[in-house]
Image (cartoon, rainbow, N blue to C red; front, side, top):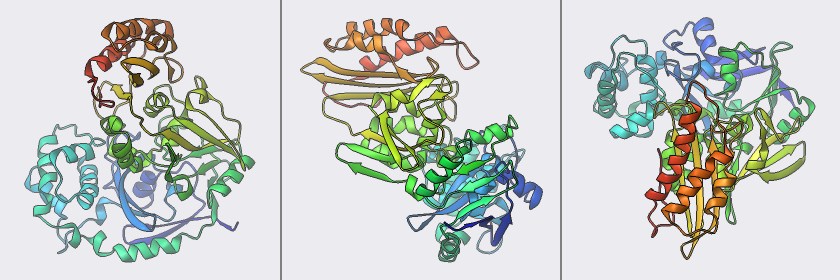
Length: 485
Protein backbone atom coordinates (compact mmCIF):
# COMPACT_ATOMS: atom_id res chain seq x y z
CA UNK A 1 0.00 0.00 0.00
CA UNK A 2 1.25 3.47 -0.89
CA UNK A 3 1.89 5.91 1.94
CA UNK A 4 2.49 9.61 2.57
CA UNK A 5 3.62 11.71 5.50
CA UNK A 6 1.27 14.68 5.15
CA UNK A 7 -2.01 15.36 6.93
CA UNK A 8 -4.34 17.12 4.49
CA UNK A 9 -7.57 18.87 5.43
CA UNK A 10 -9.58 22.05 4.96
CA UNK A 11 -9.50 24.73 7.65
CA UNK A 12 -12.39 27.14 7.27
CA UNK A 13 -11.96 28.25 3.64
CA UNK A 14 -8.41 27.10 2.94
CA UNK A 15 -6.59 23.81 2.29
CA UNK A 16 -3.91 22.72 4.76
CA UNK A 17 -1.07 20.24 4.22
CA UNK A 18 1.08 19.45 7.26
CA UNK A 19 4.08 17.11 7.20
CA UNK A 20 5.52 15.59 10.37
CA UNK A 21 2.41 15.84 12.57
CA UNK A 22 3.11 14.29 15.95
CA UNK A 23 0.69 11.77 17.43
CA UNK A 24 0.06 13.87 20.54
CA UNK A 25 -0.49 17.22 18.81
CA UNK A 26 -4.02 18.50 19.47
CA UNK A 27 -6.27 20.47 17.19
CA UNK A 28 -6.75 23.13 19.87
CA UNK A 29 -3.03 23.83 20.17
CA UNK A 30 -2.71 23.98 16.39
CA UNK A 31 -5.58 26.46 16.08
CA UNK A 32 -4.46 28.76 18.86
CA UNK A 33 -0.69 28.54 18.66
CA UNK A 34 -0.02 27.89 14.98
CA UNK A 35 -2.91 29.68 13.30
CA UNK A 36 -3.79 32.24 15.99
CA UNK A 37 -7.48 31.33 15.76
CA UNK A 38 -8.05 32.20 19.40
CA UNK A 39 -11.83 32.23 19.34
CA UNK A 40 -11.61 28.54 20.21
CA UNK A 41 -10.93 28.54 23.96
CA UNK A 42 -9.20 26.18 26.33
CA UNK A 43 -11.26 25.71 29.47
CA UNK A 44 -10.89 22.22 30.92
CA UNK A 45 -8.59 20.46 28.42
CA UNK A 46 -10.55 17.25 28.97
CA UNK A 47 -13.63 17.52 26.74
CA UNK A 48 -15.90 18.54 29.59
CA UNK A 49 -16.67 22.27 29.26
CA UNK A 50 -17.21 22.75 25.52
CA UNK A 51 -15.34 26.07 25.26
CA UNK A 52 -13.14 24.55 22.55
CA UNK A 53 -16.03 23.31 20.37
CA UNK A 54 -15.47 23.39 16.62
CA UNK A 55 -17.21 21.67 13.73
CA UNK A 56 -15.57 18.85 11.82
CA UNK A 57 -17.09 17.92 8.49
CA UNK A 58 -16.42 14.46 7.12
CA UNK A 59 -17.76 12.23 4.40
CA UNK A 60 -19.99 9.35 5.54
CA UNK A 61 -21.29 7.13 2.74
CA UNK A 62 -20.49 9.93 0.32
CA UNK A 63 -22.50 12.50 2.28
CA UNK A 64 -20.92 15.49 4.00
CA UNK A 65 -21.85 15.72 7.67
CA UNK A 66 -20.71 18.28 10.23
CA UNK A 67 -20.35 17.37 13.90
CA UNK A 68 -19.54 19.40 17.00
CA UNK A 69 -16.33 18.10 18.61
CA UNK A 70 -13.94 19.09 21.38
CA UNK A 71 -10.75 20.52 19.86
CA UNK A 72 -8.86 20.09 23.14
CA UNK A 73 -8.84 16.28 22.92
CA UNK A 74 -9.06 15.92 19.15
CA UNK A 75 -5.68 14.96 17.75
CA UNK A 76 -4.54 16.87 14.69
CA UNK A 77 -3.54 13.69 12.87
CA UNK A 78 -7.16 12.50 12.85
CA UNK A 79 -8.29 15.37 10.62
CA UNK A 80 -6.98 14.00 7.36
CA UNK A 81 -9.73 14.38 4.75
CA UNK A 82 -11.90 16.56 7.01
CA UNK A 83 -13.19 20.15 7.03
CA UNK A 84 -12.53 22.02 10.26
CA UNK A 85 -14.76 25.02 10.94
CA UNK A 86 -14.00 27.48 13.73
CA UNK A 87 -15.95 30.41 15.14
CA UNK A 88 -13.95 32.79 12.93
CA UNK A 89 -15.57 31.31 9.81
CA UNK A 90 -19.10 32.19 10.83
CA UNK A 91 -20.89 35.07 9.16
CA UNK A 92 -24.31 35.92 7.85
CA UNK A 93 -25.21 36.09 4.14
CA UNK A 94 -24.60 39.86 4.21
CA UNK A 95 -21.24 39.50 5.95
CA UNK A 96 -22.64 40.47 9.36
CA UNK A 97 -23.40 38.29 12.34
CA UNK A 98 -24.36 34.68 11.74
CA UNK A 99 -27.99 33.86 12.66
CA UNK A 100 -26.81 31.89 15.73
CA UNK A 101 -24.70 34.81 16.87
CA UNK A 102 -27.49 37.30 16.23
CA UNK A 103 -29.91 35.19 18.25
CA UNK A 104 -27.43 35.06 21.12
CA UNK A 105 -27.15 38.88 21.06
CA UNK A 106 -30.89 39.49 20.88
CA UNK A 107 -31.66 37.04 23.69
CA UNK A 108 -28.75 38.08 25.94
CA UNK A 109 -27.17 34.64 25.75
CA UNK A 110 -23.65 35.81 26.57
CA UNK A 111 -22.38 37.17 29.87
CA UNK A 112 -18.62 36.91 30.53
CA UNK A 113 -18.26 35.55 26.99
CA UNK A 114 -15.62 32.89 27.59
CA UNK A 115 -17.96 30.00 26.86
CA UNK A 116 -19.85 31.80 24.09
CA UNK A 117 -17.87 30.59 21.04
CA UNK A 118 -18.30 26.98 22.15
CA UNK A 119 -22.03 27.40 22.65
CA UNK A 120 -22.37 29.12 19.27
CA UNK A 121 -20.59 26.27 17.49
CA UNK A 122 -22.66 23.58 19.23
CA UNK A 123 -25.88 25.45 18.42
CA UNK A 124 -24.67 25.96 14.85
CA UNK A 125 -24.31 22.19 14.43
CA UNK A 126 -27.81 21.69 15.87
CA UNK A 127 -29.35 24.41 13.68
CA UNK A 128 -28.00 22.81 10.51
CA UNK A 129 -29.61 19.49 11.45
CA UNK A 130 -32.76 20.82 13.16
CA UNK A 131 -33.57 24.40 12.07
CA UNK A 132 -36.42 24.75 14.55
CA UNK A 133 -35.42 22.68 17.59
CA UNK A 134 -37.43 22.13 20.73
CA UNK A 135 -36.07 23.22 24.09
CA UNK A 136 -35.36 19.55 24.86
CA UNK A 137 -33.33 19.15 21.67
CA UNK A 138 -31.36 22.26 22.56
CA UNK A 139 -30.66 20.98 26.06
CA UNK A 140 -29.38 17.72 24.60
CA UNK A 141 -27.16 19.56 22.11
CA UNK A 142 -25.51 21.69 24.81
CA UNK A 143 -24.99 18.93 27.38
CA UNK A 144 -21.28 19.24 26.64
CA UNK A 145 -21.12 23.02 27.15
CA UNK A 146 -20.76 24.64 30.57
CA UNK A 147 -21.67 28.24 31.39
CA UNK A 148 -20.19 29.44 34.69
CA UNK A 149 -22.37 32.57 34.58
CA UNK A 150 -25.52 30.36 34.72
CA UNK A 151 -26.82 31.77 31.45
CA UNK A 152 -28.55 28.63 30.22
CA UNK A 153 -32.11 29.99 30.04
CA UNK A 154 -31.32 32.83 27.58
CA UNK A 155 -29.02 30.50 25.61
CA UNK A 156 -31.87 28.02 25.19
CA UNK A 157 -34.25 30.83 24.18
CA UNK A 158 -31.70 32.01 21.63
CA UNK A 159 -31.27 28.51 20.19
CA UNK A 160 -35.00 28.01 19.77
CA UNK A 161 -35.24 31.36 17.96
CA UNK A 162 -32.27 31.09 15.54
CA UNK A 163 -34.39 30.50 12.44
CA UNK A 164 -36.00 33.92 12.89
CA UNK A 165 -32.66 35.40 11.88
CA UNK A 166 -31.86 33.18 8.92
CA UNK A 167 -32.24 29.75 7.36
CA UNK A 168 -29.71 26.94 6.90
CA UNK A 169 -30.26 27.01 3.14
CA UNK A 170 -28.63 30.47 3.02
CA UNK A 171 -25.74 29.43 5.27
CA UNK A 172 -22.20 29.47 3.91
CA UNK A 173 -21.57 25.78 4.64
CA UNK A 174 -24.78 24.82 2.87
CA UNK A 175 -24.01 27.07 -0.10
CA UNK A 176 -20.57 25.49 -0.47
CA UNK A 177 -21.60 21.92 0.32
CA UNK A 178 -20.94 20.56 -3.18
CA UNK A 179 -17.60 22.34 -3.36
CA UNK A 180 -16.49 21.05 0.04
CA UNK A 181 -17.71 17.53 -0.75
CA UNK A 182 -15.66 17.48 -3.95
CA UNK A 183 -12.58 18.77 -2.14
CA UNK A 184 -12.83 16.17 0.64
CA UNK A 185 -13.45 13.41 -1.90
CA UNK A 186 -10.25 14.39 -3.67
CA UNK A 187 -8.33 14.21 -0.39
CA UNK A 188 -9.39 10.60 0.26
CA UNK A 189 -6.69 8.72 -1.63
CA UNK A 190 -6.82 5.51 0.47
CA UNK A 191 -3.13 5.69 1.31
CA UNK A 192 -1.58 4.86 4.67
CA UNK A 193 -0.23 7.94 6.44
CA UNK A 194 2.87 7.75 8.60
CA UNK A 195 3.93 11.07 10.03
CA UNK A 196 5.58 12.72 13.00
CA UNK A 197 8.97 12.42 14.67
CA UNK A 198 10.38 9.17 15.96
CA UNK A 199 8.85 8.41 19.33
CA UNK A 200 5.73 10.44 18.56
CA UNK A 201 4.79 8.73 15.31
CA UNK A 202 1.21 8.84 13.98
CA UNK A 203 -0.08 6.08 11.71
CA UNK A 204 -3.39 6.29 9.81
CA UNK A 205 -4.07 2.96 8.06
CA UNK A 206 -5.59 2.98 4.59
CA UNK A 207 -8.32 0.48 5.51
CA UNK A 208 -9.19 -2.11 8.18
CA UNK A 209 -6.91 -4.77 6.70
CA UNK A 210 -4.07 -2.28 6.73
CA UNK A 211 -4.90 -1.48 10.36
CA UNK A 212 -4.71 -5.16 11.27
CA UNK A 213 -1.33 -5.44 9.56
CA UNK A 214 0.01 -2.23 11.13
CA UNK A 215 -1.07 -3.21 14.64
CA UNK A 216 0.29 -6.73 14.31
CA UNK A 217 3.62 -5.18 13.29
CA UNK A 218 3.47 -2.53 16.06
CA UNK A 219 1.71 -4.23 19.00
CA UNK A 220 3.13 -1.63 21.40
CA UNK A 221 1.28 1.18 19.59
CA UNK A 222 -1.58 3.11 21.17
CA UNK A 223 -4.79 2.56 19.22
CA UNK A 224 -6.88 5.73 19.10
CA UNK A 225 -10.47 5.86 17.86
CA UNK A 226 -12.42 8.80 19.34
CA UNK A 227 -9.64 9.90 21.75
CA UNK A 228 -12.21 10.81 24.41
CA UNK A 229 -10.01 9.02 26.95
CA UNK A 230 -6.60 8.96 25.28
CA UNK A 231 -6.86 12.72 24.80
CA UNK A 232 -6.76 13.12 28.59
CA UNK A 233 -3.63 10.97 28.79
CA UNK A 234 -1.93 13.74 26.85
CA UNK A 235 -3.61 16.90 28.18
CA UNK A 236 -3.85 15.90 31.84
CA UNK A 237 -1.08 13.39 32.44
CA UNK A 238 1.39 14.46 29.73
CA UNK A 239 1.68 10.80 28.78
CA UNK A 240 3.44 9.94 25.51
CA UNK A 241 1.22 7.93 23.17
CA UNK A 242 3.49 7.42 20.18
CA UNK A 243 3.55 5.43 18.11
CA UNK A 244 -0.22 5.81 17.77
CA UNK A 245 -2.51 4.17 15.23
CA UNK A 246 -5.55 6.34 14.51
CA UNK A 247 -8.61 4.46 13.27
CA UNK A 248 -11.54 6.88 13.55
CA UNK A 249 -11.57 7.45 9.78
CA UNK A 250 -11.96 3.77 8.82
CA UNK A 251 -15.35 3.21 7.19
CA UNK A 252 -14.88 -0.55 7.53
CA UNK A 253 -15.22 -0.20 11.32
CA UNK A 254 -18.42 1.83 11.06
CA UNK A 255 -20.79 -0.77 9.62
CA UNK A 256 -24.09 -1.64 11.27
CA UNK A 257 -25.79 -4.73 9.83
CA UNK A 258 -28.63 -7.06 10.82
CA UNK A 259 -27.71 -10.74 10.69
CA UNK A 260 -30.41 -13.09 11.88
CA UNK A 261 -31.30 -12.29 15.47
CA UNK A 262 -28.21 -10.10 16.00
CA UNK A 263 -26.97 -6.68 15.03
CA UNK A 264 -23.33 -6.48 13.96
CA UNK A 265 -21.86 -3.17 15.08
CA UNK A 266 -18.42 -2.08 13.95
CA UNK A 267 -16.09 -1.08 16.77
CA UNK A 268 -15.60 2.37 15.21
CA UNK A 269 -19.29 3.32 15.33
CA UNK A 270 -19.73 6.41 17.49
CA UNK A 271 -22.39 6.87 20.14
CA UNK A 272 -24.13 9.43 17.92
CA UNK A 273 -24.04 7.13 14.89
CA UNK A 274 -25.56 4.29 16.89
CA UNK A 275 -28.19 6.53 18.51
CA UNK A 276 -30.92 6.09 15.85
CA UNK A 277 -30.35 2.31 15.86
CA UNK A 278 -30.69 2.27 19.65
CA UNK A 279 -33.96 4.20 19.45
CA UNK A 280 -35.35 1.77 16.85
CA UNK A 281 -34.15 -1.59 18.18
CA UNK A 282 -33.47 -1.03 21.88
CA UNK A 283 -35.91 1.64 23.15
CA UNK A 284 -35.09 0.89 26.79
CA UNK A 285 -31.63 2.35 26.10
CA UNK A 286 -32.76 5.53 24.32
CA UNK A 287 -32.73 7.90 27.28
CA UNK A 288 -29.72 6.16 28.83
CA UNK A 289 -27.84 6.77 25.57
CA UNK A 290 -28.46 10.52 25.72
CA UNK A 291 -26.84 10.59 29.16
CA UNK A 292 -23.52 9.24 27.92
CA UNK A 293 -21.20 12.25 28.18
CA UNK A 294 -22.16 15.32 26.10
CA UNK A 295 -22.94 15.74 22.42
CA UNK A 296 -19.34 16.50 21.43
CA UNK A 297 -18.06 13.35 23.14
CA UNK A 298 -20.87 11.22 21.71
CA UNK A 299 -19.89 12.46 18.24
CA UNK A 300 -16.32 11.27 18.77
CA UNK A 301 -16.43 8.39 21.25
CA UNK A 302 -16.87 4.86 19.88
CA UNK A 303 -18.56 1.72 21.15
CA UNK A 304 -15.45 -0.37 20.57
CA UNK A 305 -13.28 2.18 22.34
CA UNK A 306 -15.50 2.18 25.42
CA UNK A 307 -15.19 -1.61 25.56
CA UNK A 308 -11.49 -1.91 24.73
CA UNK A 309 -10.67 0.77 27.30
CA UNK A 310 -11.73 -1.72 29.98
CA UNK A 311 -12.85 0.89 32.50
CA UNK A 312 -14.96 -0.49 35.37
CA UNK A 313 -17.17 2.62 35.09
CA UNK A 314 -17.65 2.66 31.32
CA UNK A 315 -21.25 3.38 30.39
CA UNK A 316 -21.85 0.77 27.70
CA UNK A 317 -20.40 -2.54 29.03
CA UNK A 318 -22.97 -3.17 31.82
CA UNK A 319 -26.00 -2.68 29.58
CA UNK A 320 -24.44 -4.61 26.70
CA UNK A 321 -23.43 -7.50 28.98
CA UNK A 322 -27.00 -7.67 30.29
CA UNK A 323 -28.26 -7.96 26.73
CA UNK A 324 -25.90 -10.84 25.93
CA UNK A 325 -23.43 -8.98 23.70
CA UNK A 326 -20.41 -10.67 22.15
CA UNK A 327 -17.21 -9.17 20.77
CA UNK A 328 -15.15 -10.18 17.75
CA UNK A 329 -11.39 -9.79 18.25
CA UNK A 330 -8.95 -9.67 15.36
CA UNK A 331 -5.21 -10.16 15.06
CA UNK A 332 -3.93 -9.94 11.50
CA UNK A 333 -6.33 -12.14 9.53
CA UNK A 334 -7.33 -14.27 12.54
CA UNK A 335 -10.58 -13.62 14.40
CA UNK A 336 -12.13 -15.03 17.55
CA UNK A 337 -15.46 -14.37 19.25
CA UNK A 338 -16.39 -14.32 22.92
CA UNK A 339 -19.08 -13.17 25.31
CA UNK A 340 -18.46 -9.55 26.29
CA UNK A 341 -18.51 -10.44 29.99
CA UNK A 342 -15.53 -12.78 29.42
CA UNK A 343 -13.48 -10.01 27.80
CA UNK A 344 -12.93 -8.26 31.14
CA UNK A 345 -10.47 -10.15 33.36
CA UNK A 346 -9.32 -7.71 36.02
CA UNK A 347 -8.75 -4.00 36.53
CA UNK A 348 -6.89 -2.74 33.47
CA UNK A 349 -6.65 -6.26 32.04
CA UNK A 350 -8.70 -7.69 29.19
CA UNK A 351 -8.57 -10.93 27.23
CA UNK A 352 -6.74 -9.32 24.33
CA UNK A 353 -3.33 -10.36 23.02
CA UNK A 354 -0.69 -7.85 21.83
CA UNK A 355 -1.63 -6.61 18.37
CA UNK A 356 -5.23 -7.83 18.77
CA UNK A 357 -8.14 -5.39 18.61
CA UNK A 358 -11.91 -5.26 19.02
CA UNK A 359 -13.33 -5.32 15.49
CA UNK A 360 -17.04 -5.84 16.04
CA UNK A 361 -19.77 -6.09 18.66
CA UNK A 362 -22.65 -8.53 18.15
CA UNK A 363 -25.83 -7.54 19.96
CA UNK A 364 -28.96 -9.74 20.15
CA UNK A 365 -32.24 -8.14 19.16
CA UNK A 366 -35.00 -8.04 21.78
CA UNK A 367 -37.16 -11.13 22.14
CA UNK A 368 -40.72 -11.66 23.33
CA UNK A 369 -41.05 -12.23 27.05
CA UNK A 370 -37.98 -10.19 27.93
CA UNK A 371 -37.96 -7.19 30.22
CA UNK A 372 -35.06 -4.79 29.96
CA UNK A 373 -33.87 -1.73 31.85
CA UNK A 374 -30.81 0.49 31.93
CA UNK A 375 -29.85 2.70 34.86
CA UNK A 376 -27.14 5.26 35.45
CA UNK A 377 -26.35 6.95 38.77
CA UNK A 378 -24.04 9.95 38.59
CA UNK A 379 -23.39 13.19 40.46
CA UNK A 380 -24.64 15.27 37.53
CA UNK A 381 -27.51 13.99 35.45
CA UNK A 382 -25.87 14.98 32.16
CA UNK A 383 -22.29 14.67 30.94
CA UNK A 384 -20.93 12.82 33.93
CA UNK A 385 -19.16 9.56 34.64
CA UNK A 386 -21.18 6.80 36.28
CA UNK A 387 -20.96 6.12 39.99
CA UNK A 388 -23.07 3.01 39.37
CA UNK A 389 -24.40 1.75 36.05
CA UNK A 390 -26.66 -1.25 35.59
CA UNK A 391 -28.30 -3.26 32.86
CA UNK A 392 -31.02 -5.85 33.52
CA UNK A 393 -32.65 -8.47 31.31
CA UNK A 394 -35.25 -10.82 32.75
CA UNK A 395 -37.17 -13.38 30.69
CA UNK A 396 -40.59 -14.59 31.83
CA UNK A 397 -42.64 -17.60 30.85
CA UNK A 398 -46.06 -18.04 32.47
CA UNK A 399 -45.03 -15.68 35.25
CA UNK A 400 -41.82 -17.58 36.07
CA UNK A 401 -38.35 -16.11 35.58
CA UNK A 402 -36.63 -18.47 33.16
CA UNK A 403 -33.55 -16.40 32.37
CA UNK A 404 -31.91 -13.46 34.11
CA UNK A 405 -28.89 -11.26 33.42
CA UNK A 406 -27.97 -8.50 35.89
CA UNK A 407 -24.81 -6.54 35.09
CA UNK A 408 -23.24 -3.65 36.99
CA UNK A 409 -20.47 -1.12 36.47
CA UNK A 410 -18.77 0.81 39.26
CA UNK A 411 -19.20 -2.07 41.70
CA UNK A 412 -16.00 -4.02 41.05
CA UNK A 413 -12.67 -3.91 39.22
CA UNK A 414 -14.50 -4.78 36.01
CA UNK A 415 -18.06 -4.48 34.71
CA UNK A 416 -19.64 -7.85 35.47
CA UNK A 417 -22.74 -9.86 36.24
CA UNK A 418 -24.21 -10.38 39.69
CA UNK A 419 -24.23 -14.19 39.91
CA UNK A 420 -25.75 -14.52 43.40
CA UNK A 421 -28.51 -12.02 42.66
CA UNK A 422 -29.27 -13.80 39.40
CA UNK A 423 -29.51 -17.14 41.22
CA UNK A 424 -31.94 -15.61 43.71
CA UNK A 425 -34.29 -14.70 40.84
CA UNK A 426 -33.94 -17.67 38.50
CA UNK A 427 -36.91 -20.02 38.66
CA UNK A 428 -38.89 -17.69 40.91
CA UNK A 429 -42.27 -16.15 40.26
CA UNK A 430 -42.33 -12.48 39.29
CA UNK A 431 -42.90 -11.12 42.79
CA UNK A 432 -41.52 -8.43 45.04
CA UNK A 433 -40.12 -10.98 47.48
CA UNK A 434 -37.91 -12.48 44.76
CA UNK A 435 -36.40 -9.10 43.96
CA UNK A 436 -35.94 -8.34 47.63
CA UNK A 437 -33.96 -11.56 47.93
CA UNK A 438 -31.91 -10.62 44.86
CA UNK A 439 -31.20 -7.16 46.29
CA UNK A 440 -29.95 -8.77 49.49
CA UNK A 441 -27.83 -11.26 47.55
CA UNK A 442 -25.89 -8.45 45.85
CA UNK A 443 -23.72 -8.26 48.98
CA UNK A 444 -22.29 -11.64 47.94
CA UNK A 445 -21.49 -10.38 44.45
CA UNK A 446 -19.71 -7.10 45.07
CA UNK A 447 -17.43 -5.33 47.52
CA UNK A 448 -17.23 -1.86 45.96
CA UNK A 449 -14.62 0.78 46.71
CA UNK A 450 -15.06 4.26 48.11
CA UNK A 451 -13.82 7.08 45.87
CA UNK A 452 -14.72 10.69 45.13
CA UNK A 453 -17.68 9.61 43.01
CA UNK A 454 -19.42 7.57 45.72
CA UNK A 455 -18.82 5.68 48.93
CA UNK A 456 -18.92 1.90 49.10
CA UNK A 457 -22.06 2.12 51.26
CA UNK A 458 -23.77 4.35 48.72
CA UNK A 459 -22.92 2.01 45.86
CA UNK A 460 -24.22 -1.01 47.78
CA UNK A 461 -27.46 0.77 48.59
CA UNK A 462 -27.93 2.20 45.10
CA UNK A 463 -27.35 -1.13 43.37
CA UNK A 464 -29.86 -2.92 45.61
CA UNK A 465 -32.41 -0.15 45.15
CA UNK A 466 -32.08 -0.33 41.37
CA UNK A 467 -33.25 -3.95 41.51
CA UNK A 468 -36.21 -2.91 43.63
CA UNK A 469 -36.95 -0.07 41.25
CA UNK A 470 -36.79 -2.40 38.27
CA UNK A 471 -39.45 -4.61 39.80
CA UNK A 472 -41.79 -1.74 40.67
CA UNK A 473 -41.43 -0.01 37.30
CA UNK A 474 -42.26 -3.04 35.23
CA UNK A 475 -45.78 -3.67 34.03
CA UNK A 476 -46.44 -7.42 33.81
CA UNK A 477 -48.38 -6.91 30.56
CA UNK A 478 -45.44 -5.27 28.78
CA UNK A 479 -42.32 -7.23 27.74
CA UNK A 480 -40.04 -4.18 27.58
CA UNK A 481 -40.23 -0.89 29.40
CA UNK A 482 -37.81 2.02 29.73
CA UNK A 483 -36.24 2.66 33.10
CA UNK A 484 -33.48 5.22 33.49
CA UNK A 485 -32.26 6.85 36.69
